Image (cartoon, rainbow over all chains, first blue to last red; front, side, top):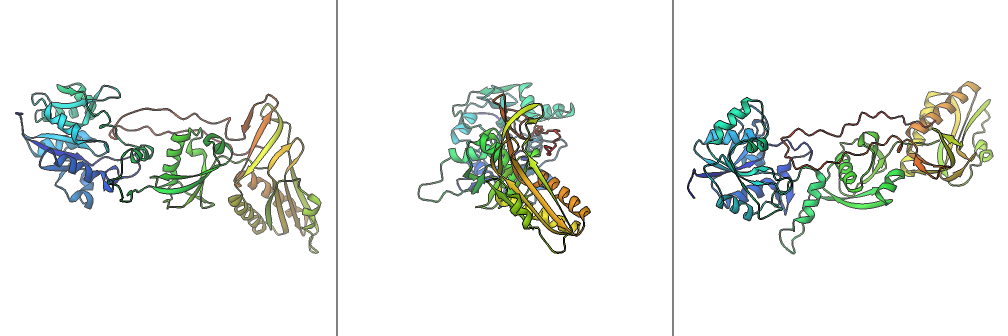
Length: 286
Length: 170
């Protein structure tokens, strides 16, 4: 395969706003997703850098790796990609996001084998909507100037960028590889789907067991009075999001209160294993 | 000072006796009854349900607040749970004090706070055969169903519900 040499870029600068905690630090098979992504990329290209925002360059988990700190104005992953292209002109980048726990060697191999160095990028089309997946893709050096023009127009969506530039689009053979994880509920599901590292080893989970009791409308909508749940949610707010997705609770969280261990608690309280949680819909005594 | 639940009819005569005090010159009580009409629907019966562990704590806190606010002798609140028919008593509040004014005031304070703060829920059953949890269902907002596959760079619209809510059924 001719074309520019390829380095790896693991995007770890995301805001994780829906997960409400650092997606790069979520644990699967006993390893943070950041470490998994770097190790995976390093099996295919070298060297591998980690893309961070300036404010994250002191973060110890990230600083173990060679970093590329955002150097251009703007926001989102396209800034990380552009910063890498700026740091190493003439290099193409195998870009890998930090929220793809199912990403596989097969998916990266296919991308590299079917790369078109004359395009701006080689990317998969989403199995969900057919649109290009910008965050597991090879970005060529020629994309640098195109990104500058794109950013100058006030745009920053890398998917839209790919839709409007010359891109080699591939059908992924591994159809699950690009399923991303943005919410506590998705993380929970991914944990179920990803097997533990090896048999005999205890499953390393950040997930913990909580006891949930349901009353009134919550009891009817969940179909149970109580249950023990295994969850990665770290606060009652995350937990409600997760259980609302599971049971279709109609009440928005803003209308509820929450109790932890039989006392009212703030939605931001840190949950501990074994805590008893009750969601309290609007009361109507008397 | 006591807040408690019962799943049988409230014995008001016995409850009242708990408030007797040689220094009390007045006594006021409030009874909440099951009414046959609410928000345009004909009600046939009610079901009350409580998260007892927290409700007892919050109920005791309300009674303690009443004692701190008003110079009363004794206060008691008993709430019924389970299935109630029309005109059944759902809640009873009694207060004794040296003079009548604080007994009335404390009684009013206690029932108002109980309705707003104690985790008790009631489900109304209607003549139409329909039913609903008061304060929960008529104003419920269906969750927005989204299926997206966006990465975090896209600003995500959070589920903001500017849905103002009155927690008072009365």
